[in-house]
Amino acid sequence: MSTVIVRIPAPLRGFADGRAELEVEAARVEQLLERLGEQHIGLVQRILTPEGELRPFVNLFVDDQRLRGDDALQRQLSPGQVVSIIPAVAGGAGSAREQRLAALRQSIVEITPAEARRRQEQGAVLLDVREQDEVAGGSPDDAVRLGRSFLELRIEDLVPDLETPVLVLCGGGTRSLFAAEDLQRLGYADVSSVAGGFNRWKDEGQPFEVPRMLDAAARDRYSRHLLMPEVGEAGQLRLADSRVLLVGAGGLGSPAALYLAAAGVGTLGIVDHDVVDRSNLQRQVIHTDDRVGMPKAESARQAIQALNPGVRVNLHQEYLDSGTVDTIFPDYDLVLDGTDNFATRYLINDACIKHRLPNVHGAVFRFEGQVSVFWPARDGAPGPCYRCLFPEPPPPELAPSCSEAGVLGVLPGVIGLLQAVETVKILLQVGDPLVGRLLFYDALAGRFQEMRMERAPECAYCGDGKAFPGYVDYEQFCRG
Amino acid sequence: MLAVCIGASLRHSILAEARQRFPCEACGFLLGAGPGRVAEVLHMANEATDPEQHYLIDPERYLRIESEASGRGLQVIGVWHSHPIAAAVPSATDVAQAWPDWHYLIVGYPTGDVPELRAWWSATDGFQEEVLHT
Image (tube, rainbow over all chains, first blue to last red):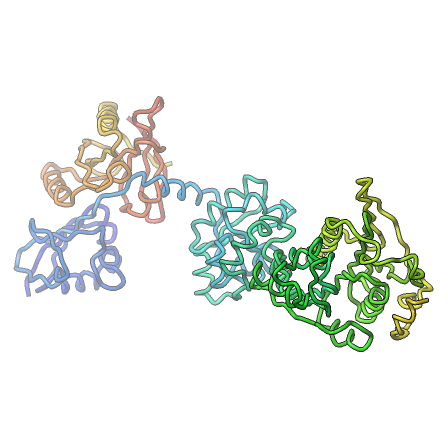
């Protein structure tokens, strides 16, 4: 055991009763520090880390020699040696990033995850500004998720009231400071940053979920949709979950099926019992010359799969009648009527009433077409059905089909795509669907005309308080 | 408010050194008989690997200066450094690496139109600004 002199630097003398030197009995440096700790715990806390290692900003010298390396604390001491504790004198303005962060911390309130959770439950918006691939690994329950790159552009869509308290969260609590400052500049009055970000949120056991998200390929494919706040990721997932039944893969069904598949509608059912004929190809663009003779439903499936392999296609190659309709319709959210005959049109109308489905109607004749949405079961604002307008079909001689009267090949493209637009609007629950309105298109005049249609309260199928009366013999009904 | 006395010639010396080292940070020690009055200013080499953003003083030099000063009845009562393109306010780095009970003199924008010199007392719970007296 040796008596050595410990020289205390001025900044640490407050922890050594104000003394500049202490005498300590110790054989090794480690023992010296233990002894010092018994008398002056505050001093040793500033020299050693909680793990018992020398702090990086403290240097120990024995006489004039600096202690370095892993075995510094094992160094033997001789009587009379002087051990000096020398602070590393360091600091500085720091990098631009450090300076910015220091300034941000002056102006942005930081709160703990627990406090953020408490304020979220009181109505504050918890805003997760991490990028998609980070959010995919988990995000706080009920967080509003908006990546930092689109923050300024979209925040007002998600948080319209500038007085709403916003709690910004990122991965580690740094990016959220920058984001919080941006929000303040936009005018949000009460913005805080969650210290430690999602890492600390998770570590402290706050609730989080792994949100359902689009994969990278889907993100790429639907990027133009994702840019639109009316669609976005939630809307695209909604489309992927949607099931649309196309009755007829002909002039109207062809463009509608292609665009609905392209838009990412997850399930498309196709009802068509016909085969591709060369005369169809003038307007039925989903089919091809080399598929003449193939069942239309199968031909349509091949085209859809080639365009978007993610779409599930259900083929219904049977003839749609009152015997088969109830086995098909319940599996869908919406029916797109692309038929060219009145018997099937009435059947679709009646079945949509029975199964409470929106019926996106389209019809073409030579240079004219019409579109509407028949939807008596619509929540809150029910519309008329086809029978409200036409309780009975016209006599056959006044209603010739395309095969009899001809049609401009481009025209069903226009009308079928208007049906597709209405379909996507309904699935996304955006805009005003053509419920109670018939859009009439005169291609020769180059004119659209909108006609109001009222529900008929006495309608036998959708009238007030009417029970579904059952299907009829539609062929017979339409022969008059 | 806390205060520290430092004569005009010492201030000139600090500012001149800060300008000369620009764009790097300049640094050095403040010696005195005790806290509150700076008797001497020392200019030290900045050993930081990124001297434009940080400063670091070699501990062996500190050791020598402290023992030399104590022979003359003085002690190290603080440190000064410059922020070449920032205000004379303790940065996050300064706060993290501060030693308690020292005067910290900071020169801000030494080559700017309006250089700053401000003094801060490093208490155990953070920096407090001090009034500069001559």
